[in-house]
Amino acid sequence: MPTPQAMQPATSPAAFTHALPSYLNPEHLGPWGIYLQQVDRVTPYLGSLARWVDTLKRPKRTLIVDVPIHLDNGTVAHFEGYRVQHNTSRGPGKGGVRFHQDVTLSEVMALSAWMSIKNAAVNVPYGGAKGGIRVDPRQLSKGELERVTRRYTSEIGIIIGPTKDIPAPDVNTNEQVMAWMMDTYSMNEGSTSTGVVTGKPVDLGGSLGRREATGRGVFTVGVEAAKHTGMDISTARVAVQGFGNVGGVAAKLFAAAGARVVAVQDHGGTLYREAGLDVAALLAHVAQHGSVAGFAQAEVIDNDAFWDVPCDILIPAALEQQITQANAGRIQAKMVIEGANGPTTPEADDILHDRGILVLPDVIANAGGVTVSYFEWVQDFSSFFWSEDEINARLVKIMQDAFAAVWQVADANKVSLRTATFIVACKRILHARDLRGLYP
Figure 1: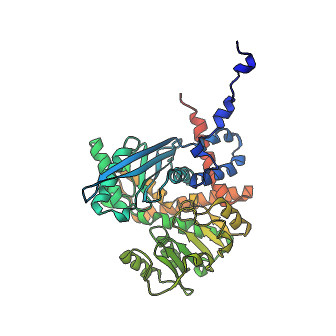
Figure 2 (figure 1 turned 180 degrees about the vertical axis):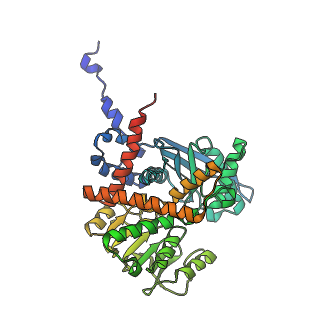
Figure 3 (figure 1 turned 135 degrees about the horizontal axis):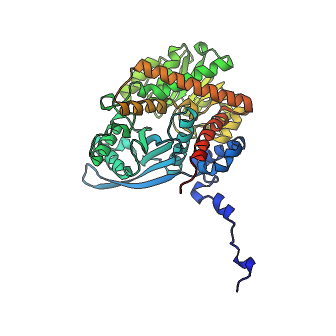
């Protein structure tokens, strides 16, 4: 008969509780690993709520789907799609859908988690979610793009819905893609459900001001930070990486406030003009040609030289992990406003902090989009729509209040704005988790 010692489990229950699957491990390279490091940094500030912190380290639900479609040439192609719901303690999942050839599960998991933080930071009643398809939409015809969108929507339809999880546009998706998603979900449900997605065309229940909302939020927090640091926006030099709905709108608003946009980079190349670019003309050029390439009123410089441009404000508004340990020491800005999700690695964050460069983190700086998505969702439920002036005023007020709360926490705890944002957001999420308890 086994001895009592032999009957003891090889691993204690506590070890099972805290053990992470390999793909969730902090040592796993990629965006999810960066997010886990960010959670670890904020844990000492959570007080009694730290007992729930593992809730933040495990997505609530992860769905991987096959997306087969007929191509125009008659063959069948298969694409891999994802929808991750990170946390729904404070409300339904909320987050975009991106179509990109380099989409990975680690990326979508991290983006869903950052949506949880972002929604809690601006205090809208959502949890975090994100989706994506590993596909290069530039290689698809419009018909093929529609078929990919509709099949993907049908596959994830088992977990999305106006009160469960509300997708929105992200990288390489737009109002048209959201219209197809809304229609597909509605056909499967047997009734029109405008609230299942946000970022739709205005004629299908979309909100005025949604397209410009993320860029407007970037500008708003930049103005608020400038007030605290004594920076004069009207004389500031701005460099922008990414020139779409986020970077382009932010550049336009900064230029309208008197700032000089001296450098812009997108997938077509990098432009520089010390006297300031004509942002309106550049936006028109990009709308016509698809990138900044070929714009005659500026000097073309090497892409890597973008990080050496003398500026006061740097806005990374492209993709993740753009500011790294390799280039953070070269940045000459006084302030970095993260228009993209996860553009700065933790190592780069530390370098920027040590150099006295103020970083306005993505989880507060680019929350304007989801804030107006919340307005759209509310308007769809009530079938009563607001004017664009009302929407912009409400957006600015929410962003100002959120930034003020984060600044106060950062000042009180002598931590970075990123850590302060995580403190505010994680406490709200885990307080909701604590109040709800566990079922069953």
